[in-house]
Image 1: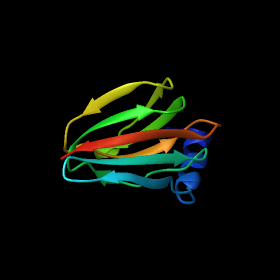
Image 2 (image 1 turned 90 degrees about the vertical axis):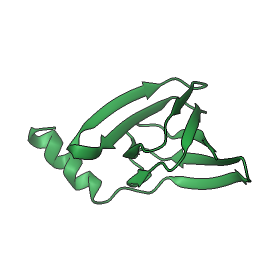
Image 3 (image 1 turned 60 degrees about the horizontal axis):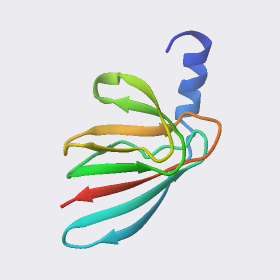
Image 4 (image 1 turned 90 degrees about the horizontal axis):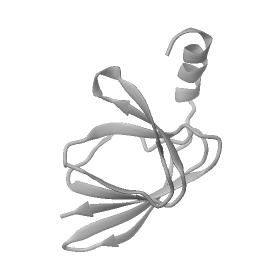
Length: 108
């Protein structure tokens, strides 16, 4: 991101809200967690230690900060389900102007 928008986004990064995290299940097979984000809120940098499945509860307008300084955007419709492998490292940010929510199911 360059120019004024990049500068303003940089200021925004310093004051982001944290997503609300609610663990729903944690047993010998899975860990299920709900994430709720106000506009501009983030998860914070993290590495996934298990394969996982995401189920979006709302439309999710994600900004994904990735290793190496790369940033990408993804718009994922409500009700979408997708999976990722263990080892993903990123920070997930609500890049939209409405709250967003998803459920993450980690496979043990």
